[in-house]
Image (cartoon, rainbow, N blue to C red; front, side, top):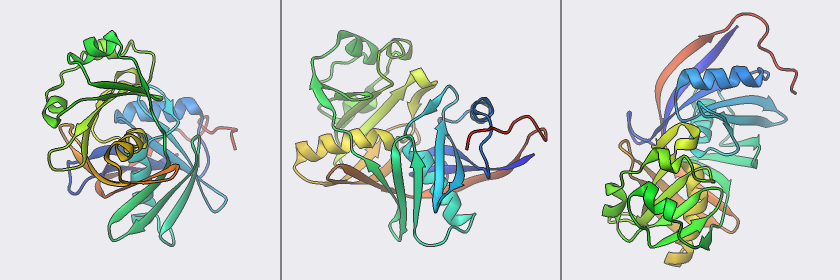
Length: 269
């Protein structure tokens, strides 16, 4: 059994920027443990798998450790593969996922993700957050991840987290954010629970960050920069209960996965 494999730099203007994601198109689902093994073998923060369904596709994402319910950069990478390599017609793709329907549209500005907005709630500061980050934020908010707010971009750049400490927290990850010097806001995102100590560019994190900054800045259109070593830029819009994230994607690798001919197929439809 041969499977196509693409590695795409998402939210990137050029090669070796943004967040690399693997994309594996399928005609039918493989067993979950096979999907997980492929993701572990790829050893990227995310591997996206999709299967045709109705007029669109069913989309799933796996880290090297586990399946996740939402991933922005691998969705962008999957849409790029469909548009650029698999001849998807038109300028919009509809994905069905564990987070509901997700849409990706194509324009001269790039690819735009239409994702659910998640509104984090203020909460009392936790000493384990301060200890894990080695710095004290000015605010803490709760969502599926912790959102920690600092005063300056330089504080975000200077963070040196204790990942073993962050891994013990009761939520998936920690999103550190502050006003940007040349953009509206900046961030860094840490997910040691998922074997991703620092994610290069995180679309799903901006489902929480964009609503926070829209309320704080009093506007719905913003430019964001994630300050990982690779870095990435996102053009962000809050549209009611939806977040629109626009970025570009660049090809890095095209190859073939070789699997034995039988025993890997799933009965899942």
